[in-house]
Image 1 (cartoon, rainbow over the protein chains, first blue to last red):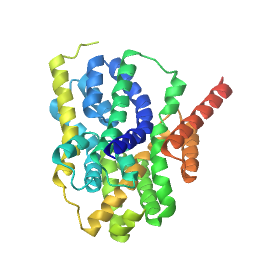
Image 2: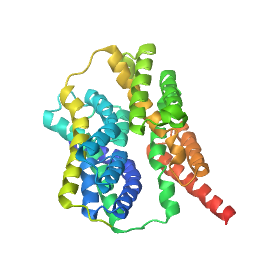
Image 3: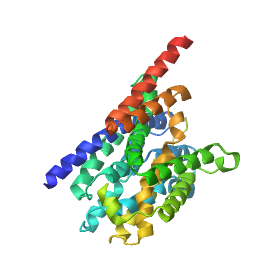
Image 4: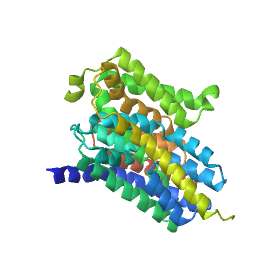
Length: 237
Length: 110
């Protein structure tokens, strides 16, 4: 039974792993080309497991930034994981022990979060272990490949794979948005707000990390106020 | 290229890893009980959709070499997802659409 859960986790982690390989190959290449040694690029991927945060991190490391700058930048870019982790904390099995909670926390990335939220059941430790293991291997392995081989894929292929993770996000958002009008409104509002932050001159100055947090908090709060969800609805879907 | 000191590099990696882990760990360690408040529950129910929506748009249009192939990939993803296809099919379908349009553009331009 528990082993089944682990296998399901591994299986659900495979699409994430595939998406991660192309991005982490790019990360490995960028890191080495900007002067980071191969071992350090791999170590960063293994210990951080985050895309935007790592790219920003190597920029700062190469520029010999202070540790304070490094800490603040990492905090701003990655603070969204706080909200994701909060959602996960409500969905894991209630009797999950502290050690397993602390281990699960390590693997909460955008994609692993997204897939775990899609699961109909409560999240068990073996399921999360499987769901985290495959992507982390892909992420670290891809970094190693990218860092050692400077150009493994023809550019046209790696450029095409860049969209894969966004495709996955769309696959997660759209089916529930078709069924629940409130989810559709939440998505449309978030997208509209995100475009405003991206294109409007004044708001553009804000870093991507902050705008995502502001949008997530504001739109989710507005929706929770206007369209509250009863616990039963949530379990049904 | 100037060599980065190993000590500095290791320290920097430790700072990045620690900050990232603490952000992920705190909610899991603190909120061990189910939150009963309807507002908070509803808020957390909407978080995945708002965060993924905001992260995907408009960034998806700049995720490849130029906007037209990305727009084609996005359209492919939306259609496939609307038809209820799984994550992998939607992701690969989007990448295939990007690849096809990029190839077409290369042929036309060359």
